Length: 158
Image (cartoon, rainbow, N blue to C red; front, side, top):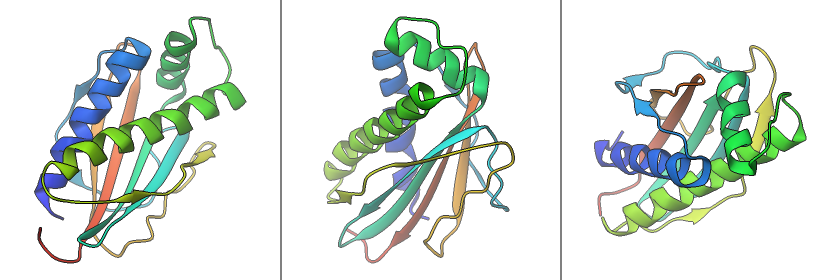
């Protein structure tokens, strides 16, 4: 994995949550993921395709984390994982990827984005279509944890 891909995604994640959900998050240490098991209850996944690289990003939230984030985004209490929370996951996934794309453009990369998909359920799995290592970054908030996964394949350096 090209290490310069990780920082834009961390920065964009922290920015989106702070601005859109008034939620402070702390990023943990990135590590290579060795399985496909989701670390939470609901996942947004999206692809970024460019001439220099392909990236698959997923963000998986524990139920307490996404319920709090969704409540903050909407200004009303959301207490059940339902379509409202799932829609928020899709929007957050899209915003994080858009912010990351902007930061990566500054480094000379160009991407087209796919539409996000949302997967929910206990013990669901996440399959990134790229045949490349998956880096997982844990994040913590006062309400709960979430996990960002980045799988990137550089076709050539910028």
